[in-house]
Length: 323
Image (cartoon, rainbow, N blue to C red):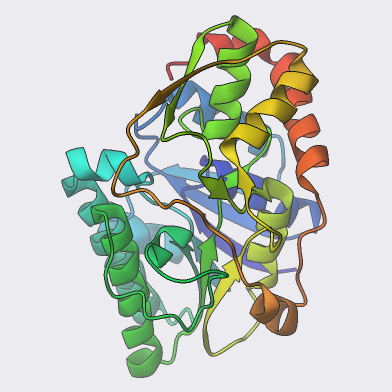
């Protein structure tokens, strides 16, 4: 059994990671500021499930708050920290970059400094496939991702660099994970799959930025959570892709599959493609296979079916959420 500190614990990826850690017999301390980037009720919904486990404790706090981090680490020294707290989203970061700098850069620095003060030597850090914008596919971890196209990507790159420096200076063992288009039950309402489910079901138009041919390497939440947990092993310093590892799937294709599952036709309205977005993503996951003994196990059809089933079981709740 290990004691793991997970930041952003009420978030989509973090909550599922916490659930699996708890199911595997670990104890988990969660930190989350419960901000209103999207409807807080969804975060509270996830958090309520975690609180059913006696192995879970929770503290509402910002990771930028050094005193709160010290209190959390003093309460029970963790064996490792999984930093999943982040401001996410490419387009919102262009409109409001300051929160992204605060959480993704300063917050990461605060965690690294707390680890230094308290002698915690293992960090799993969430990064993003958005760093690969403009690079050839499939995306390899060795590609020079030095030209971020959004403040969000820039802050993720900065967090990676901070973690790298603390590895070399403080001996922190660091797994940096670049996630690829995560989807699944209780997902973020601003992301495509859950938003499309609701809009198709309600007969409302889907706003597509582009012509629908843009493609993503969709990765089911359980695969991502398992990969995140696998990354707790000692690696030294590694940047590792966690993605579907298959050919990218277009948004048009995803919409068609959701139409079949929901039994309703989508109304698609195309808008100009945003220059900060990627036309396609495709993860090379050979490194994850070799280092983490990890590969995705849930295909897109199964993952979408499980997501739609969750949506249908929670339809009234989802429809009440602010999108």
